[in-house]
Image 1 (cartoon, one colour):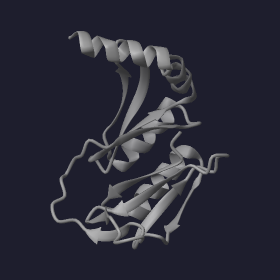
Image 2 (tube, one colour; image 1 turned 60 degrees about the vertical axis):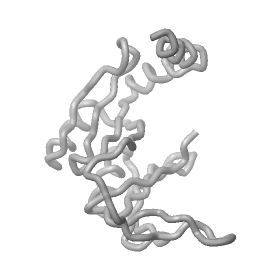
Image 3 (spheres, rainbow, N blue to C red; image 1 turned 30 degrees about the vertical axis):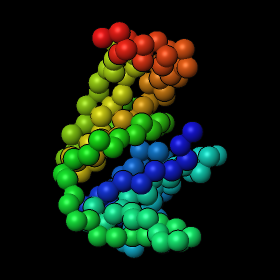
Image 4 (cartoon, rainbow, N blue to C red; image 1 turned 180 degrees about the vertical axis):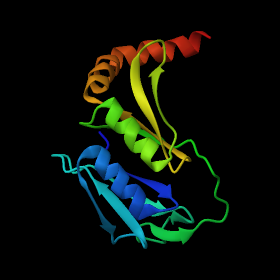
Length: 158
């Protein structure tokens, strides 16, 4: 279970506010990392997404010290990072938020009709798969250990 994640952003406060809107939660500064914000879902798990300035990175601490903020030396426009999040909103509401922001947002089907998602491209660089309540039901039906083993086995046979 994922409780929180962090993602790079050109405008951390704005991105946190938009993500919080999708969840029906709230946005607030994230004091642990300079100039960062968090989108707080307000759920029983304490789910948040931290939005960090894209010109910063997390670096390992020294000795017994925890991670430290650092400056990005070579940042790419895109990355392999993405996550799936649930929303109480409808597909139309999520698509409207994406349109309002000018961010690419579209409904897609994953795999061989496994489940649907809304690709929500934050700042047109970082994808978050947003799942409405119906999509969450589809996802949970697909996302079983048996189905993941069968799905992985198709790759081994290819």
